[in-house]
Image (cartoon, rainbow, N blue to C red; front, side):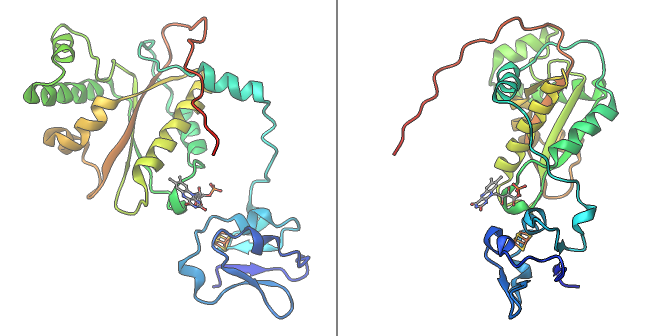
Length: 262
Ligand SMILES: Cc1cc2nc3c(=O)[nH]c(=O)nc-3n(C[C@H](O)[C@H](O)[C@H](O)COP(=O)(O)O)c2cc1C
Ligand code: SF4
């Protein structure tokens, strides 16, 4: 089946889909109806922009009709609401002793899958851990790795004193990993995690990047084995998540934007 099919009755021959296609793989045929350039299927990003942009719904892409798509909507969010979301996100490290319900986690993940990925490969996999014993065990493995490498002695000492600075006793850990299919896994996973952190923040759930864990997860063999990721996968980001124990009453200042125009 052709990747793209056009309903000639609906097509207004406006050329919008041809102009929109990021790789110029659509062209007008003799009747001025768009078609994919023969052999271009391999180049197609499957981004669905041709399907999304057609004003009359004439494009069916990869068997998906315009009617099968969720209608696009003006985001309808004011600048102040966007600023509120971005500025009120904090790296939350102290959590209530309360699990994040799995249905809420799955709702967040269902939004996050729209985060952009290089060439639309969508390579990001998530391993979700909401068993605190497992989270604590993995934090302990990272500590063991630090101990063996004689780095961050203050973090190891805190652990020995009963404080987990690695995963902060978080009720939920979301680990983003990809295999060899990704074109830019660090960026794709970072964007996905950032999107998740913002979505979570909007729902009153605090997140914090787990940097020590991210490094240990690819370096410390016992932790790699415990994670048991699919063959060839690497961890690129990990987020601790949970309901914040404390409320923030003000937004801490940040540096001015460092801008230069050229
Ligand atoms: C790390 C990264 C690099 C990208 N590089 C390019 C690029 O060089 N040129 C381009 O046209 N699009 C680029 N994109 C955009 C992706 O192709 C796009 O996000 C993807 O096709 C999904 O489409 P959407 O963002 O409209 O959902 C990039 C996206 C990411 C995340
Ligand atoms: S899915 Fe994207 S890349 Fe493929 S034909 Fe449509 S617009 Fe072009």
